[in-house]
Amino acid sequence: MRASDRTPLRRRNFVRLALASGVLGIASACGQQPAAETSGTPGARGTLRLAHTLEWAGKEVLGPASPARFFPAIALLYNRLVRVDEQGRPAPDLATSWEADASATRWTFRLRKGVSFHDGKPFTAADVLYTTRYVMNPALESPGAAVLDIIDVEQLQAPDDATVIFTLKQPHADFPLLLLHYSMYIIPSDSGATIDTSGIGTGPFKLQQFNAEGTTIVVANDAYWDGAPGLAAVEMVGIADAEARTAALLADQIDYNDIAPETAALVSQNANYVLNALPSGAWLVMVMRTDQEPFTDPRVRLAMKLVVDRAAMVKTVLSGFGQPAGDHPVWPGDQYYLPIERGADVPRARQLLAEAGHADGLTVTLYTSSIDSYMIPMCVAYQQMAAAAGITVTLQQESADGYWNDIWMQVPFCCSSWGERQADQVLNEVYRSGASWNETFWQNADFDGLLDQARRELDFERRKGLYQQAQQLLADDGGAIIPFFTNDLSAAHRRVKGVDRRYFDWARVTIEA
Image (cartoon, rainbow, N blue to C red):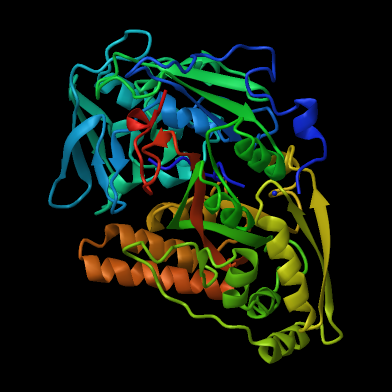
């Protein structure tokens, strides 16, 4: 599986003297000893060290369905009913098979037998029913609720311990894809009050220590149903600053991490590291809140998009490690992708601004942060491009600590970054009216209707056409300036094996002793 979701683990001149003063010491950051020492014994398992971004400023929790979920650990602790294969399709995980009735409204999943949670409790259909109801509980405010709203919770059934039947409110030919949502990592029955700190799942690792602001440690679950992991433990240290994370990697204080493109050349020249550069659907966006001025006017929103030279941004911001995007989040590797080649059109942007009452120009403040290493370079490039159309962009750089809590979805114009999602999920989760992560606050009944029609349509080509209409509407009318998709850029010490694919299995990762 990928090691990223809302924002990837990735993301540059390092804070002076940080290494010399030892502030990046992984094992000593909070006074702990390493969970497992790397030894010279043949076949011995080692400990993998990585950094995370403190995405929620220390407020991270281990509950997969929580808005503040600690994704780096969640991917190690839990399983979903389905996992994703190399083609981005659902494959068996805790479910071994599934089938729909002729109407695609009733889906039957057969569950894997002989699986236990970390506390020894057997995994059964009751846990799937509980997890689904937990995610859908409005009190939790889980981002997954909008994605999974198609499930009729009252009609959930478990005919036996190894079978679950989902009844949908309307047909959905791609329903298993929705179960790839991170909120659908399965938790034990009746664990809602404790899961945020217990981290009890069925995954290849189990929790030893949880300290989001310091070091979190998970250790091998040798009773894992898919075989004992190749690592003894994984240590995850919180480092909010992108430059500090890269410095920690190059100083051999962490073993594996996503990196920024300007670091790629340096890493590739270092014989101790392997650079992985893989196309992905991860994307950055400049978010215009459509419920706040001046972005309530669709002409202003379109003008803001038309100033972007996307190919130039890929070259300058991403150092070529990416692909141009057309203001919608469905990437070229998705089966429903709509190609939109949107070049810069400054005269048209000026005309739209004049029609909207801004003939003398427009001044906006764009909030940004180093929480993602691409954000500030993207904003600087945008500032320069927008000036050609009479748009003055003032950049307001905010601290990475707490950016998602204090800035994102709070100000009229800011940056955001997202991990790859399949089309139905991202369009519903981020742009459907009323969705909890609808960061642009865009409300469009026609868009919502297209998504509903697409889910009901059993013919693939017609379904594809509906999803593509939705992408076009979002690109033309929505509040998202999406200039590019980023490559997954990661670097690993040569002793680390198994992290060189787009979707990798944490249980099969190893580190040479």
